[in-house]
Length: 119
Image 1 (cartoon, helix red, strand yellow):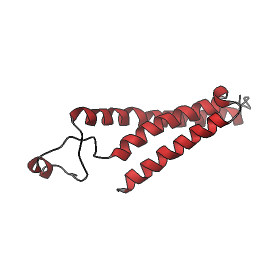
Image 2 (cartoon, rainbow, N blue to C red; image 1 turned 180 degrees about the vertical axis):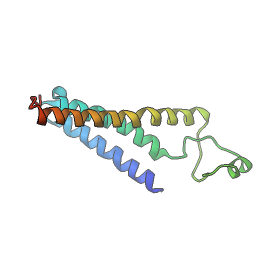
Image 3 (cartoon, one colour; image 1 turned 180 degrees about the horizontal axis):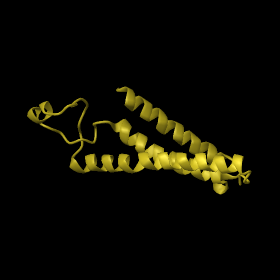
Image 4 (cartoon, rainbow, N blue to C red; image 1 turned 90 degrees about the horizontal axis):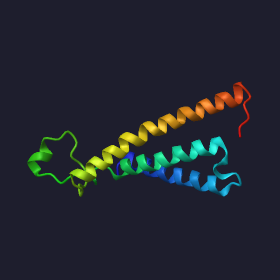
């Protein structure tokens, strides 16, 4: 297993645990902080799963086609559509996680600097 697949798997597992902890609290999704963390975790699960799959959703190629690729390692069991789905999920989820991270930073900036109530 490649390092990026290991870290992506650990990230997805961690996000599942964050969601589990959120739903174990009494407030659940009633606080802004938990809603931001929940959405960020959902998108992280999607993106991390796409990265953890690696080349698996890629279409099978002939030896001649593989020799022309820069990186041809990994098992390829997919087709054109699974490859496009993986690319779409990665393209949507990674910017979404970054956006929710910015939202979390702004939330804490407002909560601390302007003493806005955290609920």
